[in-house]
Length: 100
Image 1: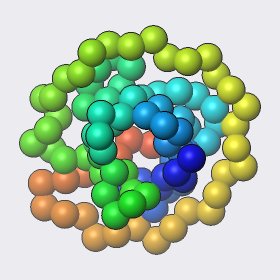
Image 2 (image 1 turned 30 degrees about the horizontal axis):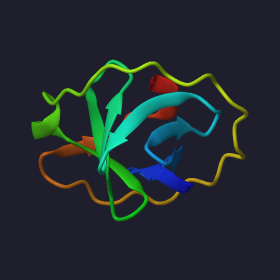
Image 3 (image 1 turned 90 degrees about the vertical axis):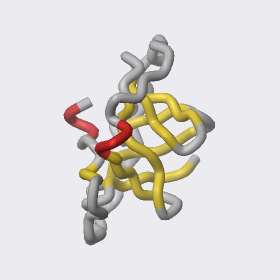
Image 4 (image 1 turned 180 degrees about the vertical axis):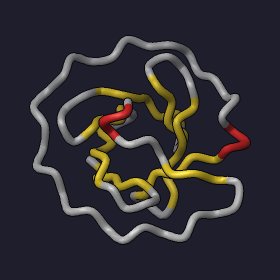
């Protein structure tokens, strides 16, 4: 399990194998390598700097196969937020867990 924060520093949740989970136990995405896709197959973003999630605007058109989400599970304790990183040109912050 790899704990994950958005580029802006908000605690998101974790990656377990190739599944992306929010801290409150909702399965919201699937990884193909470092790229994360929603259950509807839309590009969400990717992992950068080992544990930060960022969205590259030029990849927003990418699609992956649609998949069925796993059932919700017990959440984990919400970790403290970090200071955000300076945003790269052509990128935006990863969606917040409550928005997925």
